[in-house]
Length: 333
Image: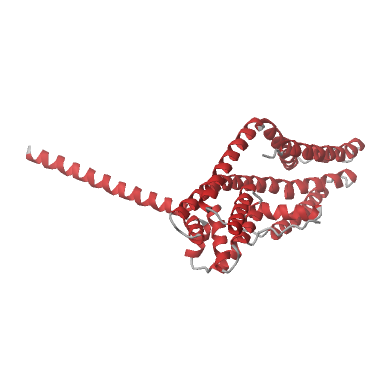
């Protein structure tokens, strides 16, 4: 009987020890994971040993330049692509990404021509129409769709974080902290992308930049109206005075109301936006996938006179539809 009780006590002790050790291990791993999530990229780079200058250069390597009032269409598209690359947090410079796309275009075009020659296909006008279309879809179309998707997700995350950052900023001011300390608090407490962005603002202020100018540069990088409202509020308070915490509290309420209205508009226009997304991306993806899986489907009819007329017309209709759908679903709130 005593031996049985000792054995049972030993088993209970072993079970309790394993349970306590497992809970400690899970708690340690969970805390480390939460800590990694709470730290933004800028703080991670600083903790790795890099100085503030190197970190700023890394984070601002895809910062879009300022557009002039007389900027043409090509310049606007270039700045838009650079901003998309920055918002998507791609670790490659935008010019290198564009150069890679151009090289991929010529490489894919050359590969298609070589494969067509090896397959004894006739080199005609139809093939010369298909080759750049397929190469453009694979080298420009698909990467731009992926890049735009990543940028939109990160932009929505920034829009959701910004009112929270304003609340942290306002509470810090109400506690008696100066503006620089409030910005530093947002930098240390908020995750990416807004944590790193306010960290860049903090660095610029430390190097002697004016607060409205540093915030305005952040607003131009992201092209968000909420940030521009924040910059205007800071600028007006700097010039005329007033209770900054009360101003920012009212601004946070306005931004949240505006976000609620935007969500309502997005819900009401979700069908149109989904249709626009599908009609924009699906033809490019389907064309590229069909050519890669069955090139003969296009090459066999490439030299047909109807194909040489219908294919450019199809591309023209796709372009007109793309522009029309984008304008219909681009609702300003």
